[in-house]
Amino acid sequence: MNRKKLTYKDAGVDIEAGDTLVEKIKPFAKRTFDKNVLAGIGGFGAGYLLPEGYKKPVLVSGTDGVGTKLKVAQMSSIHDTIGIDLVAMCVNDILTVGAKPLFFLDYFATGKLSVDVAADVVKGIAKGCEMAGCALIGGETAEMPDFYPEGEYDLAGFVVGIVDRDRYITGENIEAGDKILGIASSGIHSNGYSLVRKLFFEILSLGIDDELEELGGKVSDILLTPTKIYVKSVLELISNIEVKGLAHITGGGIPGNLVRILPEGRKAVIRKDSWEILPIFRFIQEKGNVPEDEMFRTFNMGIGMCAVVSPDNFKEAVAVLEQAGEKVFVIGEIVEGERKVEML
Image 1 (tube, helix red, strand yellow):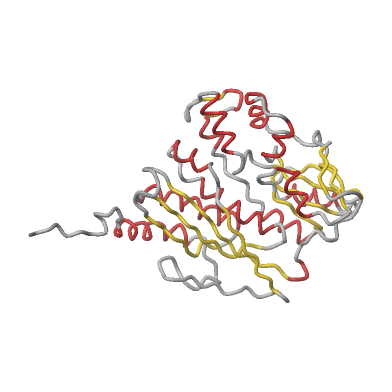
Image 2 (cartoon, rainbow, N blue to C red):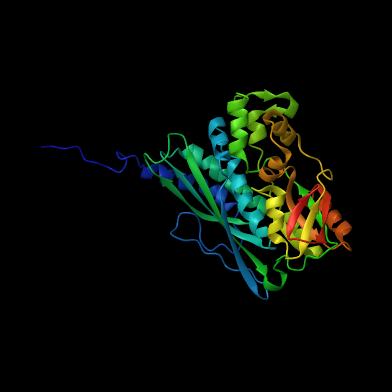
């Protein structure tokens, strides 16, 4: 009995496509390399030489994804910006302790590998790494037939950064009278997309390519605006000003994230009218009839990063951030009281 020879490709895994992808993404990754990268893309491991100039270096790691914003990218067939979101969600997290990102790795998983789609995704990851000043030194591409629906993929990112032990930001020195600065976001960033998709595509029955005049663009462009990467501006701030605390405003909004850096006996009082609520959030709240407190618990509402600084130098802090290209608001202050965030 002559039976057909079974190959891995017959089972749905194309090794040659994976090899092609590696060759295609090498130029993107190479642009992010610095002098400390010891190995290139394609090996079994990647080495990174710790930079000099740190007295007591502390390595800081972080990992994240982009949630169901991936669905929007896949609906629109726009894949070259979602990688920026992936990098942003990771590097902004480790930035909150003052860490400079050193290197980044990604994990891309799909049912059937499309070299062009995967290459676009990695191109965005590399761009995000360039924006954050870190090296894309490796990653993993997994082709898993029957595991993901056709045309879908999943992403995860991993970052390692460095900070001197003496400059590690913990929030423990936050005291009454300190000012809370809010650094503007670029939009929804990468949180709340399950609510967003339900509103846009189910309740409002919008198409991914529909124009929204009140928001000034297509649905795809509005919803795929990349998460802002704060690394360079905030590191500039830290090098000039004593920053007592930093909070990345992600899922949970300002109330759920700012509280994480407060010491016991300190309360953050936030004035909701002290900054510009972006039009996209007004749209979501009005069209979805979403309660205000739900909006502030789900979205960043226009503030992507908070910094706590002394009242003696908050004006200088604002000036440094604005000089670095950020839009900054004084959104509140620290008072004595129960450890929580009060929204007024």
